[in-house]
Image (cartoon, chains in turn yellow, blue):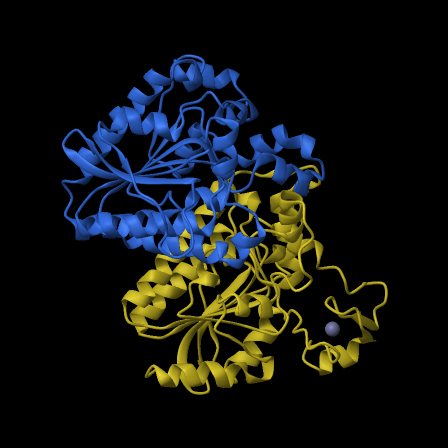
Length: 276
Length: 272
Ligand SMILES: [Zn+2]
């Protein structure tokens, strides 16, 4: 899984230059204010930057309609995992303290332009958006709630893959979540997957690629294996746009690239077509 | 006896054993299981992936579909089978034939032994992520019994794609992991040489996985490992597979699929 690949791309907005933002795609400099005002979208190249989970929910759900579900579900340190730099528990507890979130996905019910849905939103800043047992459990429960309440499922993914600190059980979340998505479809309900920057590894290889429609934002990174792993395997340089949203659309794995400002309208329109 | 040996071996010792080229390969298991295996090829889309073996055979009273990773034994075989690293085409072939098995009520036996799904340019372009995702969704609801045997390296998503089943067996010296010990060491230790430490931390041995509830049964290997006596190792796998099949075919298919969902749902649910 390419957890690290994606993570390694993260710190491109240098913390020392608190006032400046640098676009990770085209390298343009701009003030943080400009970046923020533009909805974390690069005014030069239209790269749609990462959004913190609460900002994404606010940008997606009708105002005041989001009710969070399964907040009690969090990580598990069943391996008592520790590595050279310390133990998993302290690392994730620090993330929880910093972000105020208890897992890499937030799930709940809301309406989008009046359409009732179950919404899941991942946050890359929470352990690289990694798929842990708590993440998988929240997603599976969200799917089951959607079936019980007959609501469509919308999941915004952002992840480097499975969370290795939780070992084999994190891998098995790929199977668990995919089985739960199958239940949603079996029940005659639609599932829209929105793959945001970046979605790779075990998340792209499970629920994120299983949408009845898979949509994404301009210039998002989407793939299975990391670029460097592939280059080292095939001993070739890959094209610059490899694993970009545009590249995936060209190869047939993305239904549409949707601008952030159009996302709500697009999702609502699709749901209307299908009678939801 | 198995437990005594277990105490002396490190997780990384088992990684080395699991990768030993002299261990039984999918071909050996098929020969031991079936008298009359017929291989079938192709995904009906673009390719035939030699890294995924698929075909029908007779195993005692059962007509089964066998799916398995092929690493190959000679250098030429290794190359053509990509050392057991499957492309999207291989997973799509597996699904195509599994659908056929469902139609004619053939139980499925899968053999898992791969370093991982192939990380290649074409693999990405033909949708490696989608192929694995689709396999997971597909096998979770397939209406026929599925027995999984992890025989060597259970490498991440590339292994899991054919490891969703009703009964998951694992050979004593096989390993099954979310990431290779070397990969994990490179990321979390920033030093690939720390693979033994990563292997221990990740808990990837059959005994560990049984304790974590990730597998259902450990199949004991001959003294010193399966590579010392392939025949005996294959015979032990055969016995466990037969026993599993005989139990599973008695279960009405609706119930079987419901039980499979429950099993998947229970993985890592600490909030029951
Ligand atoms: Zn830019």
